[in-house]
Image (cartoon, rainbow, N blue to C red; front, side):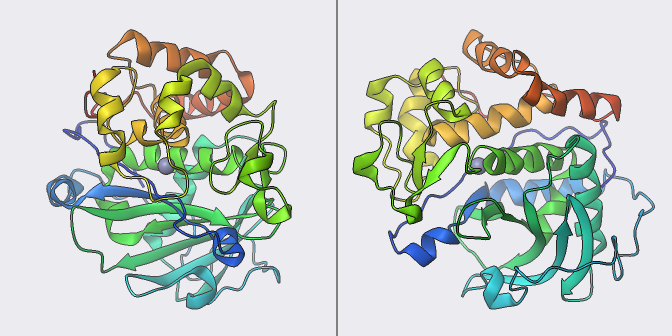
Length: 326
Ligand SMILES: [Zn+2]
């Protein structure tokens, strides 16, 4: 995806879901969704034409390093197709590289998105992905899914990242924010960060925040993030078991200008993910609270390197088009 900075988006609303069930198998495949308002999606369609085409590095039908993996069930059902979401195409990911097409016939949209993701993810940052997929959506209503990640194995060391093929094009410049956002949900949920509940850890055994899927470790990024930006009072109102929506975050957004929109205020993870996307794409803070959050990333070299990579590739800065809080 070519980034064309002359076509700024007026705003972006993203949201994310948490599990509605404690079923172990479902939790293993628990999707973390990014959603976008349908009204905004319609607006974004108008902007999609602003992005120029970029010659692909790969042939989408035979992209990658020509390798496969046996630990991913690369079928529609295996990847999570349901009544609303249908997986159309998927690629294996091996050692952080895009591998063979394992579902469908390939997609230039997906290959271009991968190239962008690869550009902003330095070093071994993509090694925990096992499959990169594209889906179509029949969702109706105020919000539709634009992307999600979910665990692809039991111990939480491997992930699936999935993009809505339609909104990936419509996302324009902000696709890079979406990709960084999703990637943060991977590296904050690896086994050294989150002890998964299906390994015998339940909410009652958590000394730290139980996010519906496990306990964050004492030294995890999310534990530090919560200590820095989420008070006990704010945490009391977060229900990790039910699906989070922008509505859930609206009250906190109204009170605290540090959030990048109501959706970011729906949970610590969404707050982290939206700010990480903003940090990587050099989006400026509007408030001291937002600046403090950006500074939190700047102080951590292992996270600051993503911004360095984006900057070196000429990706960003973007305008701050997030909904206002406070
Ligand atoms: Zn998210």
